[in-house]
Length: 491
Image 1 (cartoon, one colour):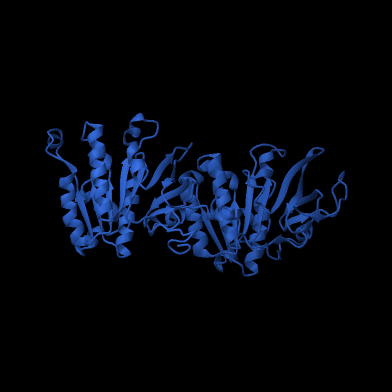
Image 2 (cartoon, helix red, strand yellow; image 1 turned 45 degrees about the vertical axis):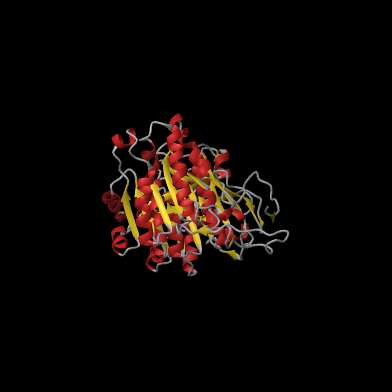
């Protein structure tokens, strides 16, 4: 509240009911409007019923009793579905803190005019009163409305319900189906005007997997996040991923850290910067994973924890392959300084990969996160999804002071711009190391170039290098045909 009542500048803040759903209250700037109605709309399988039920369940655990009115499913099915998420609804019912009511009506009684919503409200009056309920959810209210053939009567019944909710000062959620691309969805457009808050759930199909997103369309008297936010449904409930990281409140870069190779450290003016984001880019076979593993081994030997997210090969395969250039990661795993998280990109939608990654970061609390390779993100669904995954991961790590090392593989030749751009995230990356092949007669030669390194003086020369059984070896001086340029500060 700002100022004093009756004075200029006085602002009455809207009272809110926290949903206690992971990530959602942040988007809603505190929760749903308390004592008012929220509409949740979306197509089939988007999670409307689960979101409404979790709002009720979390509220009960926080001390606010609630009633769930199911207009579609049987109460037994609702309880069984809740158990798959770890919610024991029946125990809360037995404890007198929650109730499930089945609102299944005989269509004949509706057509004959023998039914109106006042009968249902009379039942709710007694049930809500005995529980002293503060929260109520009408799930699939459109199923009830469809029993009426008269749109005018539909509106009259819903406005009667709306007035009842307001008079009882209950925080309410109505869920309604809204199939995209179907003109029938606008049949209940009036509900959007009636509700104080409108949330739309979307399921976007991808090439391999679909992505669930949540978007707040309207919130009277309150600010709210206006993006479309990915979310997942898993044991424990709904987990929404807000974009709070985009506030760009990152801490300054830390001191230099060794790359694991003395010669490479010199090119970066002392090594990578702590809490920076590093992109190692190049075509297949240029040595990207070897460079990343060199850093991993050195960091673990310093006693620092590294989380390695593998999207191209298994943990066992990567460990075995790195023995060739003399990089043994087994001691780091045995000392629990290195943890692998591996998954096929096509296994889940982007948001689930992101949630699992965030869980691993929060649980393991590493100093560094390595991703091999971000080019695989596009196999999670789309280029847009891949970009959002990379942006959110980099910003989450920056917020926590974690060094992020990203490997990116091109799909074309050495001049492929995607090698350098890294899904379009190059603007937020602090350091870019480009690896490439060049023809030298009848052989191929490896070269590297530090394209940029913020906050560090670095080399601007191409340097030849080789990968031997002793690791990475840089050639002395500038390669043949290259000018011996001077170092400078990266931008």
